[in-house]
Image (cartoon, rainbow, N blue to C red; front, side, top):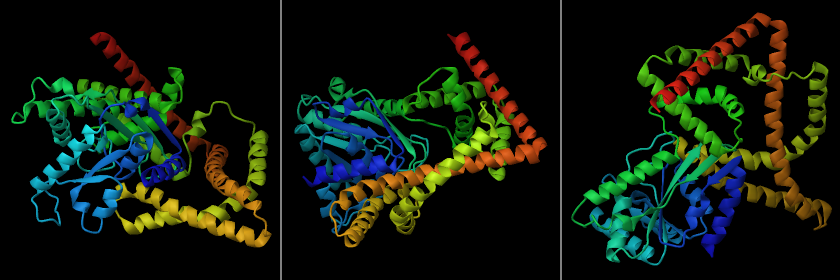
Length: 454
């Protein structure tokens, strides 16, 4: 009962924390067989919370053994966490790591034999980056070991899960969860023997290949920044050109294709993008310095100045009172989680999950106090359900208002510079046009190479 209660709270919190949460092939999480979920691990304990909230099954988690001690072990057991020890991990128990892992493996076998579900992060560590680190063999060993104990009759499946965060450490960012095809463990029965490690390595490699297809992978930080800059400037152009829906799934496909194009063209000529990289960095840096957004050049349909000012000033006048009221109810519980996250851990990978979990408590406490004050002032219980609905809605309006204000001031800044420094804006526009010419040429060259190879 406690598990499902916390799952419900986390599901609500995730929907608040993320601006958009899109899942592809979610039905694969709920197959009526024993399951092992395997996923990449970019965002510490946000990842298990996210996956468990999407599954209708009760999930057991394999976690880093070093965080288990006599104080935390009872709590972790309550939340169905089992320890796995790497060579670098330490234990407060007298048994060896090998013996402790053997115990955990046996518990996994027993759980899977009862049609249970395990969640494993086979990279073993969590880092916010668009990479897939080396996949450890533990998942394959558990899966094959469980099936071997039951003569490969469990019908155990491994479900690969790709977690793709836009900005993993930021509130109101977006996440795309892409769930892959189930891997049937019994298919490896013929060549498997406990003393032969070849089948374990084969299954591990297949897990790695499956995960690679489900996430965005860049080779290094430099390439990653280049890809992100292309996304920022050219992604909308590709959506329009190919008449794609504005879904995370379509966006995922676009980014994957951009990465392939960059790799293919740089294999042909390693300096292919050298000049374009510098041009994009300079252009985006100039926009940042001037307080502009690329939208100032992207919008081809210009609203007349009077209409632009009338629309936005009307929104300002009507929205400002709601913004102020929303701020009164939501500012303190909104700002406290980021302060708590900063105090608790300096590791950026812990920022988002700490913010979300602490936000559950700060908003619960703040809203409870607000409801108490409203009752003291009105002496009427009828106001309480209305206030309970209004407070979070006003909080969301504050976010909308802040986003609108940033866009509005950026557009005003663009108009000001167009009038006061037309040569500067013309220079920026020429930079942008040169970048787009280079990107369109790269797109044309890439398609030509694909056609040639096919």
